[in-house]
Amino acid sequence: MRTALVIGTGLIGTSVALALSGRGVRVHLEDRDPDAPRTAAALGAGTEEPASEPVDLAVVAVPPAFIAPTVAAAQRRGAARGYVDVGSVKSGPRQELVALGGDLASYLGTHPLSGRERSGPLAATADLFEGRPWALTPTPETDTEVLNLALELVALCRAVPVVMDAEAHDRAVALVSHAPQLVSSLLAARLEDAEESAVRLCGQGIRDVTRIAASDPGMWVDILAANPGPVADVLAEVAADLDETVRALRALQAADEAKREHGAAAVGDVLRRGNAGRVRVPGKHGAAPAVYETVAVPISDQPGELARIFAEAGRAGVNVEDVRIEHATGQQAGLVQLMVDPAAVPSLVAALRQHGWSIRP
Image (cartoon, rainbow, N blue to C red; front, side, top):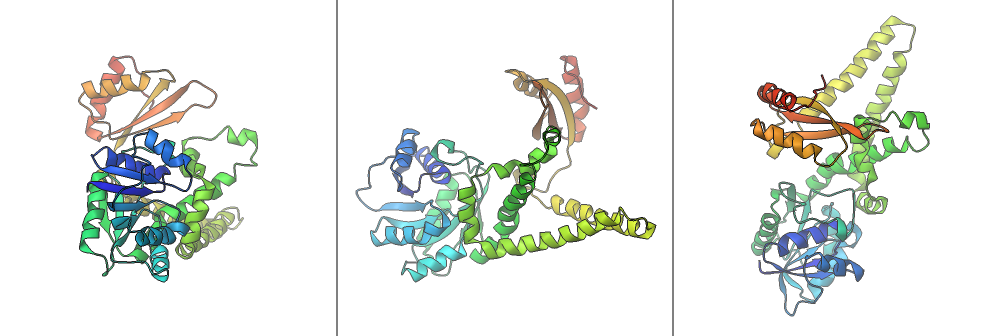
């Protein structure tokens, strides 16, 4: 791939453009908002100048409702040899493209499963997709050259290609992306009118569960409107579990011991099912989740403190597999949780203590 056109220079489009430009591809930028490609170009994502001839690949990075008309318009003007979109739903836009008379041979629906809570070109990074799954949904009509261009795009962005059916993709993202967004938002909404004394008790658990609730509502309305059926199906199953769990919790308040035992069993069943589902979430490098032990270290909120901890771990020959920070409410301090291989715990603890760090039990 020598040339590309990115239509839509928000977070995803600009990140694609930055990745391609950084690997020697000449990228042309388009957006209905003239300020967006100007900002993206200033970041080094490409040029606002129109291409003088068809590019190798056009990447359409617009909201789902606009994918089909944007692809169809680009095809009519012969903008590229191949066309892909990077929207989060696949079957609907493809059907709309057919209805608009678009060419399925030169088009391939794709979806990089990566993002951030922030939006817009200023939030973009060239490494946004590194190591992340990138779904490709070819059809029997898809030209081999277009599939190869899409695979090259994924490789240049250093993502991991996953080929799947469009309808299966939409059901999958409803479960692993779209429904979680709504569940996170629903729980975070409970905090809006909560007593200040309750909010001050927020810990890492509520921060983890509500992190994605900070996402742009307008963007998510567009996404959910394009995949409402599968998302509703997942939420209906969650709602059924919630109803059952509510009944179980009410039973725990009953005077009858048998009812309390039944309630406890039902709540325990939900928690065990959660354990079983969590185990299936891919771990580091896409492998099955490993069992790590946590070394918790109190840390002050000062420059260089994290670097010191990682340096001590490195000198001890310990690889930190994952890290989390729990911030103390109202204090310039926090708790760093280092996840490491169980066999490495004694070495890490000894090294940290030797250099003055305390270890939280």
